[in-house]
Image 1: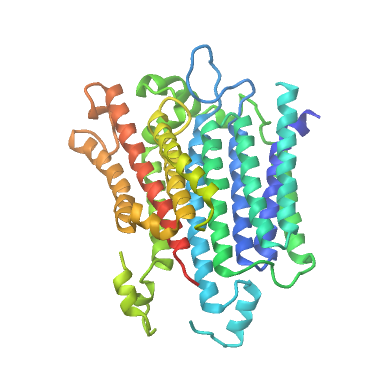
Image 2: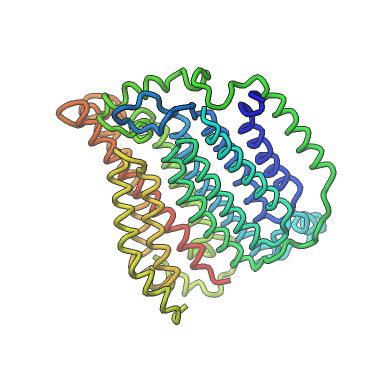
Length: 123
Length: 197
Length: 138
């Protein structure tokens, strides 16, 4: 029981990560792939934040009467990673909009078919 | 360790897993985007529970706000409502995913348990930050002082990445992009020229 | 979008407070939760809300895309200049100890300016991305 409680966070992180992974490799819609990547990303964030937590610890803002704090370093890494993540997601979505303009579809398999049959629908 | 804390933790994590699986199964793109917003909000609540207040703040503002907005804008621009071709569950990817998940789960078995103050991750530089940073920088918020001072190079790199991503979006979708593409006649080139800036 | 009077009134009421809250998060981030990244996104949210309710063209009038792009680069530049200031005052890149009369004061100035640079870049990048996405006409 103690092992289950001690590792439960990591197991759910793996479930989330694999859900994102499945979307990326098995589903064709590119917007959905971006959602899958962001799920994967959040799974990594939850993993880091779970590791930084300490039982009985408080938020890492120094205050009178507290001696035990959570580890601030993973918080810093993830805080910046979230904002970088949205900026890169925006870049991916911009590419998707361009792909739609160029190919008329954002389904990965249809674009692959088009390229194999050499029918290029120019803009 | 407080049993109520553990229960809240387990409940939020299960809720997140349920939302993630709903995203995998949904074929309605609008629902997928909305569920991803809910997913981010749940993550923010979980971060508050795990005492990462700064991270929760960021996730609530970015993940649930701006990111959902950008996904909706992309949906509107690409006129996609439903994923085309409702496909059944595909076997090969599923096998790969389950195998990877099983290996990762096996890998967690000898990890330090959740909330363990003696975990190696919490023993290396964290004690120094916790004890010295309020004295050295005079700021009580350790996250801010580590972010801006101790790891200043790192944050500079992150800001440059954000800037670069912004420039990338402007280059790909900004006005006047058609003028840069070689070999394409731009019918409304004059208008673009005037509209620029 | 022009007839949503409830949205327009509520947005007009909210936007000043969103901006004020963003400034609070920016400059109180040293003492409570917050900092440049969060403040930048909240600041951008105010402009995005304005552009959503009153139309993207009116949004561009309030904050022209050209100025926004300058601010976007200016934030990164401010960050680098703070780092270089440490070098010119006889220490290493991004060492804030020499920026003030005492090391603690120097750290305080350095962190404040660096967070300001982060906030400027993040907010204007978010606004730029939104302008570009909302300004597409396909």
